Image (cartoon, rainbow, N blue to C red; front, side, top):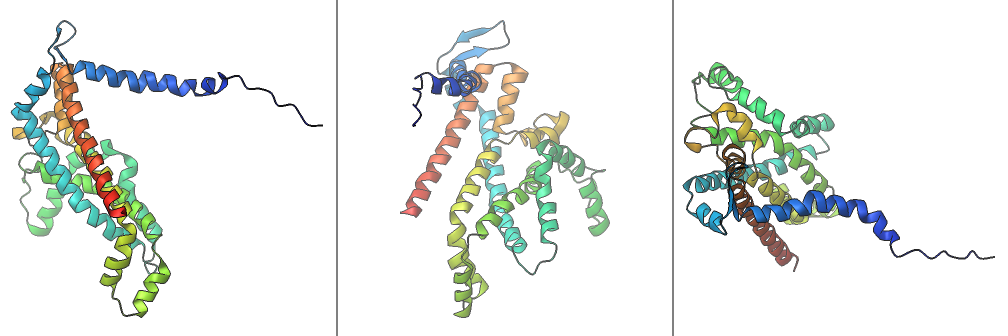
Length: 295
């Protein structure tokens, strides 16, 4: 005897998705709408708040400090990602070799900085790059008679930030490339080797085309993360704010200073939306380029 199916009330599916919809509306949608509204306001604490329209965006375009922050951020993103991608790929190729003993241990050691988080890396980098007592200057001085008073965190802050970011993220991106290398057709590689193709030719014509989608994706997420950098310069500079001549000032750090130090949440929201538009434009560009490659 067949069982009679019970009719499900039309509100039952909405009951199950209600927790997600409620949390999304409360913690994502409402703050997003509120941030758009804030871009039209000017505030300096709870006692001063009035409507300014699009004046915040026009002020940003003529704000010299914002352009310094944008220049620093773009410089950091382009150089760090430009070094990070080939370095991560090279490590992945090395860690993927079957003749390498202790590969698992090496992979863990290279990946481990990503496990401890950006706060730990920022604090450790501040200690390493100190002028006289820093570990880097001490090692360079003992090996090459390097000046122990070399001012990494003042005169050469950008190279210090790039080195710290490489220490943290190179191993993390190596894992993506390692996963991509597992999809390379071994039979095709062996056939090319038998036909006389060398390692470079096999890499350029077989390995690289296979891992290109993953490489594009990793480059995109690294660019997005680099354009949002905040923790590294903030922790490395400690009490130095944005560093001498704003050498460590990034867009997100400028947003933080404007919103929390000065108290102008409207101007800070406008900065955040300009950064968001830049990131969205970068994602759209990547999507168009990847679609063109697929075609």
